Length: 543
Image (cartoon, rainbow, N blue to C red; front, side, top):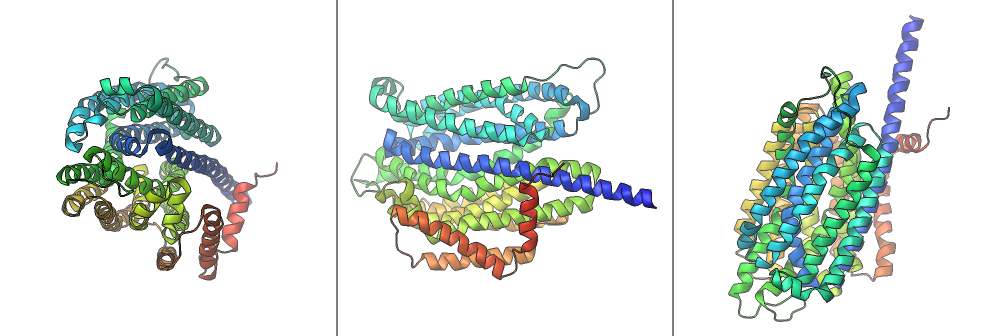
């Protein structure tokens, strides 16, 4: 009996230490994600100044398409390779080589599809100026097709510090490349842009993105290599290319719908802004100045992109939770059973909901002040009402993303795909109904935000139901109610708060965050056990 108890205690201690290591890895990935967010804010704040608001809005149209392809490749490669490597045991290097071969072929097909789709997209958007930049972004897609599997390998081996470093270097290179090339082209390459039928600043920014992608790929290759060829019989943990493709295609389809969901609102908005601008005698820019239809439409797209920048913050932070939770769930399902899976899901989803609520409360309380931190007063005033609505929808999307990640990690790829397909269909339908019937400009971006919030909110209900049915848990009900109460309270408060200056905004935002945390403590959501957990994760075990 003593030996049995000792063995049980040893097993528990090992599991606890594994959880703490994963938690420290999560903190590293979270730190990288915060860095990514900060550099993204800097990038987006400076791009309109470097290339102009019209070029910035047109660039948002380009990324609304290319980012769908890029993110499908990155997310499916990371998840697919991570899952395979985590289960490969001693044959991790062989698993990398096998999966990398498959993903290179997948990326080649995806790049071809993007290039072929470029003229169709430009026609649908009534924006011929975006054709050449979309084709240029094919270079980024091809490069990410090799880079992303390497990140998946690092994630599958739980080398979270290296993964975090790659994330930070990639963010830095991309920001520097887009700003530097964009600024240079805007001032020195107008002739080249005119010959390509596009805008100079936008063309330069896409060229910078391509160069940044090549740079981070070279670094990743130096760290990981390309794996190891098989010697002899194929181990059970190393899949054949055809079998692996069958495994990853459902993940790709699910990610296609997820990332389409992220971009569908601005994609549909761009089309209807262009059509409405062409029908108005003198369309007005966000600054109230009459302009050419294409310029006015692109500038309003730029305003909506500014709203998206802040509305996506909850999703970006929650993505770090999924990066750590995914390999843990895959391993727990294989080794520890349903009870452990439910425990991990409940704990991870609770943390996700609290983190998501923290971001949302700050944004709904002071949307105009936050936009003003990064953009000029005209963009802030024009976009604030839409941001308050859009962030509620994107917070629902963030939690839906967590639910679908759980489903994918537990082998329910088809369910995840169906959920995101439903959400995408609802969003497109809502956009078709609401946006073209609104007057040009401000009313149309409000309609787009409303369509997104409604569609994503409904979809989250279905996502929560599916996650609970599959994993046996999701966000605890009391947690959801407490976080929801905080969001509702700060939304009402935000209606009466004035617009703050930049310095005051930097002081008020932490105060709102602190109020949120204190409110959760008062309501009993946060307590000593949470502090103990955080300290146990942050402090490495003494040997």
